[in-house]
Amino acid sequence: MSYGGRTEIVEAMRNIAAKVKKGELDPAEITEQVVADHLYTRKWPDPDVLIRTSGEMRVSNFLLWQISYAELVVTPTLWPDFRKPQLYAAIEEYNRRHRRFGGL
Image 1: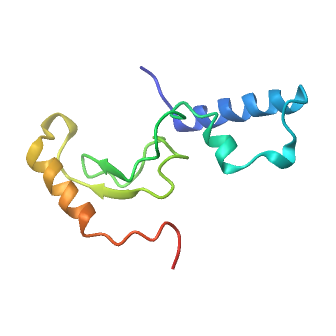
Image 2 (image 1 turned 90 degrees about the horizontal axis):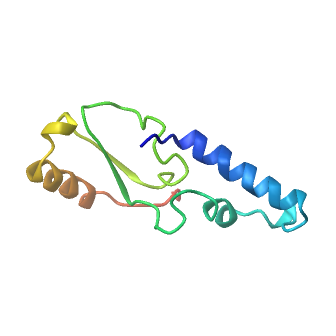
């Protein structure tokens, strides 16, 4: 499988633009929900948490639209070594967060 968040967004924009060109969609009707409805993950809710393994402090072009309000949990454990104890630790870290969804 080959996935890239930027490619996903570009493909969604192309599909939306095609609908506008055909007269099926008015540009004024393009909302965040319309964009989300054209993403690969349109059938699933956005994630609440993104667990980043290997200590990397970047999202690596992964679910760029979908993780806009996700909590990031970074673990130094490499992906092949990530097991239940690391998952439980990440969940505990997430549970300590106060989510504001972009608010103050």
